[in-house]
Image (tube, one colour):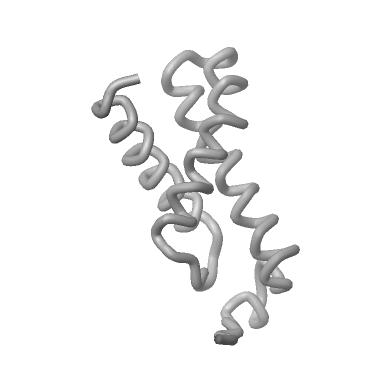
Amino acid sequence: MGLGTIVGILVSGLVIGALARFAVPGPDPMRWWQTMLFGIAGSVLGGGIGFGVGAELGAFVGSVIAATLLVIGYRRFVQRRPITGPGAKMVDRKP
């Protein structure tokens, strides 16, 4: 695996993660590397299924959907915030 492949994976993970965070309403106090990890994980989980359904476009859509579900799960179970409503906009900034 070459350097170009690794950079491509990281950049695509950042893009997929950013699209997933954009799809979920409200602020998310995540760092950029967390966004990248959610994008990479979403690509691994949803990309294969999506590719089986609709080739490259299906892999992209499946990756974004899987990453979005991971962001929703992170918000719900780790941050302990609702997905929608007024509580979704509240960000608890503990040190």
